[in-house]
Image (cartoon, rainbow, N blue to C red):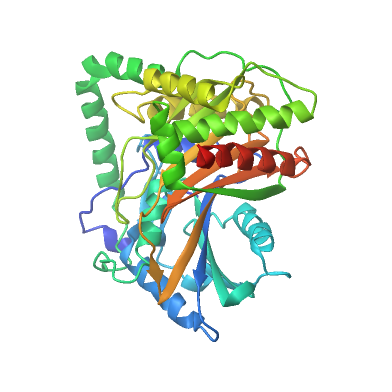
Length: 446
């Protein structure tokens, strides 16, 4: 896809909305059979005869107020800088909203199978990169909403901001004139040179920034070999484990850690049990933790501002012991400028892509065992279209020689951990689910 100049743009000056370094990172590493998608599955408590057209109108209103949902990322000519976001004049809401029935028996397992199928489905590159699927046929007259975003469109925090636009009573950003003409090439060129000049002006500060980015990434070391590292295929499976947020928080604070530390300690214990059932053992689990440069955002400021912090966490010892050591490790690794590694990762991966070796390296990497993403959701129950939102299930696909990954989200006092696993490489997913449930139950008993 290449940039083409609109006739209406020739006499109009517009701001140039470029892809960020984080956007480019997610675009560059979208190689292989598993698309770089993430999303969530919402379950709404409805009454019999609930009108789906009302929910569709809410989505349409949200889309009209969020510029990025009607934009495409368009490549610029050589020398004109990073790709730019432009309005899609051919935008059609019907291309992005589907209604489907949940397969029998209409329980959570069937919904999760449908959700992973929807989120694993490639999005059309010529359209804005998102979809929403309304799911009927759930038990107890509930309705599901599966939201799928390409990571280049929004990170997890941005995705939550978009979903927040659907909530009853939430202030929506004012609609904007659509479609806005694309910026003329001369302004894209001017913006590119201004960006380069600003980069030159910041060059004396470049070394400290590079050091911060390298510090966040840590020193690359090979992870202990085990069956967690195998090339992933296109088929994924999902499972969830839940716990009361107050129980996890109380247990974490009693052992000098945070909720995130407690979840990491529970995950290391569960992975240890999974590997033991396979006759394997590793001294530590190398976890890649996405680190956001922002605590929150709005639906009009999407994109990606996320770096990566790999950490080596102990798998041996009791849960309290692992939690205390995990808390000490994460405290020592936390950066004063989180997310600073995004730009360095984007540059390195773009170079590897140009050399045509990125996909090969991702499918053979042995630097991490798994990925754990943690998001803080709304603390109070929300209502969408008159229906109470019962739960939010976070979903992020696993890829690149990582057969198991975890997405964590808190909502209305409940902590949900979604486990996503390669369907072929992890036939024993139930073993992992049972072990994680046991770890979190121990926190509730103490």
